[in-house]
Image (cartoon, rainbow, N blue to C red; front, side):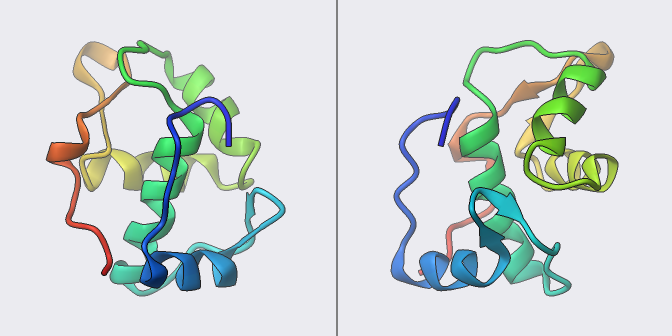
Length: 103
């Protein structure tokens, strides 16, 4: 699960991840927001490290290792406040700013 911190899914998150993540790749982006947020949390934790400052191509490269639609997932990560992009530089936001976790 490099490069991020340890990801310990809740039982509900684990169930969702089994349906959408296979061999470290997102096989499909969930249509339901509740499930999409679980997949985005997994992506944020496994693809990014706190304190890193990344360009858009660097972010796209990390996401593309997990799903070919890097642009859509990058926008989702920003829209749901997992990542921020002040001045075109992407940073992982603190987990306290992320949406609440799935029980």
